[in-house]
Amino acid sequence: MFKKQSLEKLNIPFETSKQASIAAQVLKPDPQLRPEEFKVDYSSQGSDLVVNFQSVDDRVLRVGVSNVIDSIKTIIETIDELQDF
Amino acid sequence: MSLPSALYNSKTFGEKKFEVDPSKPQYQTTNGATTGPSEHVLNAGQVDIDRPSEPKLKEDNSNQVTYLSNLRCQLTGLQDDINVFLTEKMELAKGKKIKVASNKDTD
Image (cartoon, rainbow over all chains, first blue to last red; front, side, top):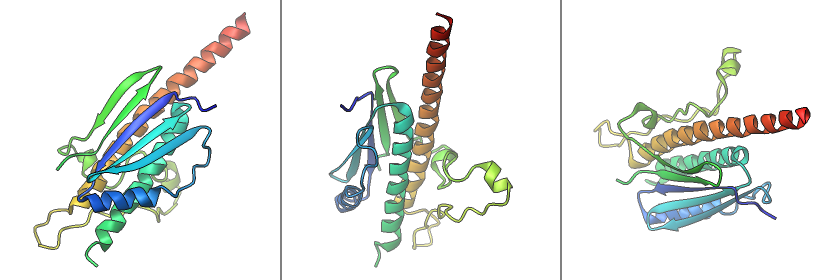
């Protein structure tokens, strides 16, 4: 059974609710490599992207959170580059 | 403009909130201190082809960065804060495991 030892809530304020919704939809299909050790939940609340993490320990949490943030930064950069087209 | 934030919660270490201070340089760059190749690898001649792009400037010649580039910079700083914090917690947990193991050895 999954042991919830660590929990983190990450809140990212996008410019618009549409951008936050797009980010949540882009991230949701990503498979979780070790679902018995690490869980991620994405949602959009208004213009905020909200990400919740659950992990068995801080080591797994560090790797998982940093990877998700890298993906979010790529999404932000992509929207920034393409939103005028 | 609201700022990105994060909340850590652990049974062992309690709660910690991560907040961005936009006036500090660590929240004004796309180059994180805890991401990308290590200095050792770069000094050995490796070229960082995945280096993040610089913040994008607004097209109105105001020399200001766009909202989303600003957000990316702030998120980079927040990511560094979280990585440093969790690395410290990992070291603490590692120390505890070693201590428990050595106590078992002496029993």
